[in-house]
Image 1 (cartoon, rainbow, N blue to C red):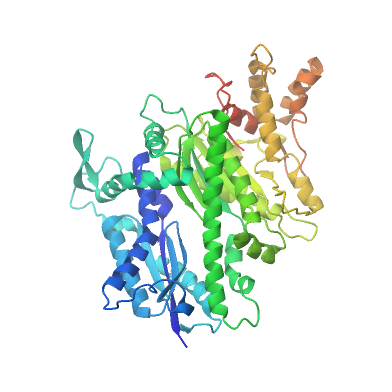
Image 2 (tube, rainbow, N blue to C red):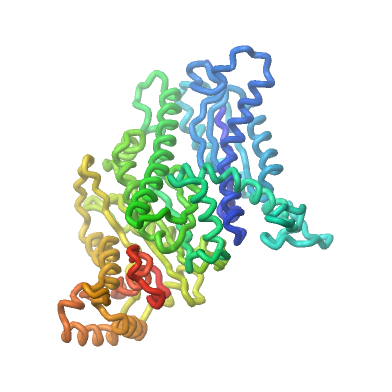
Length: 559
């Protein structure tokens, strides 16, 4: 029998690596260095082939069962997973990739783990994969922070971009500038990233280059606000942990061969789903608005997405991506098959957090807020939306914060800021159930889930925001801005005060204000919630026809 080991190479701290700079070009370069890690692994495999005396090198990578020395399972978004016939090959691969990372991507933490040997087709492959992922978590704990690589004593000049010790002079425009090794590496890698970002977004290299310039905030055409968006699938960790059971039938004579092939199909299909969904979302938005959006997909692979965009297009782009991702994942067998086996439902849920901030707002803080909105707010739908059998129902869920002048910088602080007498000025997360036409799914929600979902529909939020910017035949607001601003001020004073003013508006013109009724949704065991403040915050960014004017200032809120 053939003895095989699993090898895993991963980046960690990659979000800090991406967002520890205020320069969009450097974040783009950092994203390229993260994307390079699995390519370095492939390059090392090719180099190992060149260092041998073999004349037949066609089976270096492929299927272990067919004689290949390396079988690749996953290569995306800074992660590489494979089986190797030789533990020596695996160790050389880890050494080469981590060494290259130190040279090419200083500041990026890259770690590798080699598993214990096992006999191929003994059925041990799934356990070996789980073991290397578990060991990776243990190894990371003992790895020193990348900050220890860059001591500032004795005293050194500091890089103006990263605040790390300056290491070299980098050519920029007509002159040069002191830069740290980290900043310089990101800067140089940006040029190579244009091709990847253009392919991922469906835009041209020129569009990408222009987007970087405008989203930096120093261009006359820079948007007033930018958005940092982070999206992640629901339940994928549990699914991957069970892939051995889901992908291989009992009694399969070659269980590890089957597992490796189907794991690779699953990871490649999921990667394709994400990229296709994002390109389609960008294309749909471009067709709607008549212009190419400024968007930079920094991380796009598997169910993981992080992008920066003009705030004017980010909410609509995110919504399109999330719904399209669920539709595509539910209709492509490489993903839908295992998901259906795990849950009885082919859909894979996904959530996102959006932080909308001024261009010069600290980039790292904007990402942390987007990540908190995702993990602490949007993903709560995963546990609250269940069927009558108490099984999670896949959904799209979204939480947004529009940062204007609030000092709050965490979700906990934002929630406290939105609590008023008698209610809560947000109903987040906002949820949508995607039902692909060719994959009908009938899941009956439990009573508590139905009650929780009331007043939290994503479509409801979008419709309310559209109503707030609705105009009559003469181009005037159907609902006067002055009255909306007064209603917003009354909301800040508490539920009773706001409802009293709203009743006066309705009594004066019931038809005009019907779209805003009810103002609050009652909640069992919790404060009543309203989506009006969230809709007012989002309305200027959803008014893609350009009806929103400069004085339509969004309220600081999170949806």
